[in-house]
Amino acid sequence: MPSRVHAYSAHIDRLVGDAEPEVFVAPSTRHDVPGVTALRFAGLPRRGMATSITYGVSLVRHRSWEHGTAELCMCVRSSDAIWSRVLGYLGEQLRGVCPFTYGNTIDFGERIASDTRMTAFFVHASTVIEREDAIGIDVSEPSLSGTDLITIQGMYPIHEIERQFINERGLDAFWNQVWDTYDVSRPPAV
Image (cartoon, rainbow, N blue to C red; front, side, top):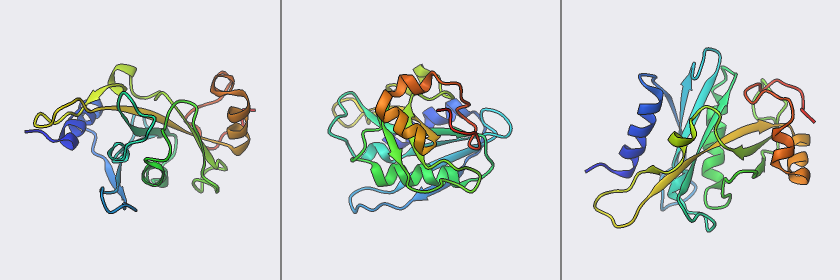
């Protein structure tokens, strides 16, 4: 019988085709669940970009999750693998604490990587995974009762001033600014 992780892996494999990931594991700070794995797919969706997807965030429930759990996806125009490591680290540190719902902002507290001045993130729908492939991924184990659904949430690196803007004016006000979601070296949009 397929397990939860096998069902999720099969879904990701279907999305990325033959692409082989680099695998990073953020060790667990909890004794009851494993760490968070971040899969980094260099060259996806196009050359010069990298898409990272987690598994393990959804193993720790958040009280506000009613219709499923969350995993994370981030796509950046960067060759630095630290972006994937940071995604796994954030997922591990904040699972059960942050609901990872649209509009949540996260203050990383320092430059995320050497190729950026960004120090924060926000959560929104993924721009690299189609909605029907990101929402309601059924990873239910046949031997267990109930339905187990995962939604893959998009994580976007931003500048601190942008994080403050989102917190003050809302995500829609920021999302409608002119900015490149993948450019980690861009200036602030606000």
